[in-house]
Length: 607
Image (cartoon, rainbow, N blue to C red; front, side, top):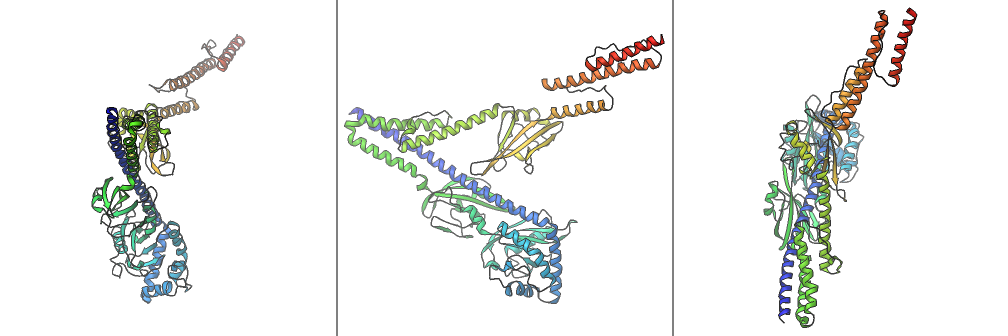
């Protein structure tokens, strides 16, 4: 009985400890997964914003767009001298447009033979193609007086004025005036979502850029209206969110800047965001997680900060706590069932219960604890078909991946090549020993180019300082007297998502110096000067061998040609006693023999 009692209490103690440790592990895993989901969505959202920015910059810099803006502005001004341009253009392109509402943009040429319509027919197909290909809601062109003389979609804002007109205080009006106020070709203005009356009051966001001639004179403003459904498709993706999860984009105004309609929950654009109070750290530029309540249900939230131009958002991924902890609840139920069975049949199978429950849970406890030390895990428990076996298989897989990562890191630490690894924010997360040693050894030479980099603090610096992000593949970098060949490649997971970058450095200083010195000596030899010698010092054995071979060759040629010249000069001066005495091989020996034989024959002839 004592043994049975001890077994019961031991089983309970081990089970409770194992349950709490597994509970912590499950909670930590869920938080890390939600953080990963929010980071992945944030990265995709940043990439979308970056593509919009690139489209706007490229389109605003095109000469055809600037020329069309000047032509449209001139035609609009002439039309204003004759009639009300808003009434005339809206009648032609909206009221009398044969295409139904929502398809007014399909009209290229109304065939009224006006200068404006000719310009529209030439420009519109290209702009419409850009809108349809890149998924924008609308594209606008303004003159310097605020006249919206061109849009692709042709809504009620078309041909109105955005300085004193009915929509001057809209998001588009604010974006236009801000771009016009600073007509720098690199100036971009972003207006986040707000209700836009011409689009039937639907939320709309805009990005605008000034249009500037090559000589710096502004001619107008180009603006894109971004489609809310594109952002929703990125944010409101169900992948990785289980049955109770959702993702949302929250602006620093406390409103939702994306809509979500998943798992029976409707979150409308520009409505107050839930759990916004806990996301303040995200608006301060930090990533993190929090435990909160959503729809009166406990939930776990992972969030990531996203900044673009002057706008700040937090992308949050949320999942019900019950679903997060479901594996732990399942384990608790299994544990309760096993304990109940032990209490009922303990007089007969107490020892068997202890072996089947206490030992596996104890081993699981030790295995989980050993993960933190990085020790290799070997267990036969993974062959079990129950929840405990599943947990052992999960832990074994985590251990295996950790061992693989450790081997990769060890190989990078011991190799001669220099490597840097960065995350999606271009911050260096790892520098191997060869790279750290190289930076420490050449710190004074490198730090001016690398913005005063502390050799002891490479990790956390920007990888763009070591290899510009705009240049892919292999490039050559010069740091004072050092020459480095740098190669940069993205790190991509099995789903094609970019996880960061890896940069490899190769010190080509000696190689470049060898090429330059060799070119100098060979060039001089090509001009008949064999007196030059290679002067590379402190080189490796292979390089020293090359230098010695070249110097030996030029020395032999210099000596042979010098002796031959001396013999010929002496013969020309009547001195028949001069001979070549050097120890030569091959063709040089034949040359020496021929010269000496010639001198002997001349001596015999002269007598």
